[in-house]
Image (cartoon, rainbow, N blue to C red; front, side):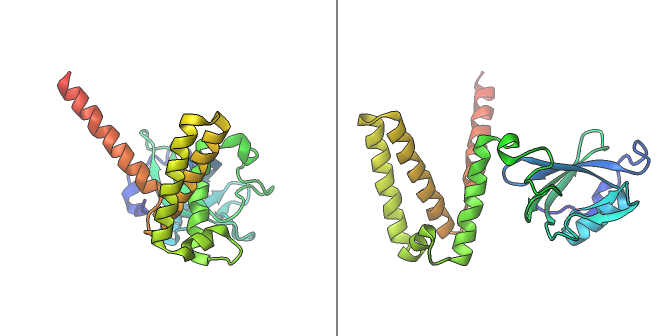
Length: 218
């Protein structure tokens, strides 16, 4: 994802909201909705220039960069408008809680608002952080230290154990082995400089190609 130049938004309809547009803020990896704010053209321009989401505060009547006091800024990954050009969608990487009350989202506790599958994005982010920081006490760090060959070997072992669990063990055992396999695969991908989002992109591309083939053969 890339930050779009604010000049690309010359078609926005600022008149509907008297110079303000609502901005839906979404976690760029998990898709979780974090908050709703408002921008005027100046706030949008500053957001795109700085890479930190800036709103127009209706109560303070001034520009307001999220996290300017707490440090819990929203790093912009991408921003786009809807089909009517009167609402913005900002995809962000939050640096701490989004809500001023300390919760992950302004719409409730995290477990209440996030899709279950979105935890994979969180796990992928954690593994990336472990790879960068390599804390001594972390099992993930130990895997990285063991080298690529050992990590690949570990994925192979977990794959065999998952297959065996599918054949001769109960559902809980299969789920446990599948979890181990997925975790070690994420670590192996990160060791090669890759992440789950790239795997998802390949799957999505294949799915799209199949749909095209099916359409052309019917």
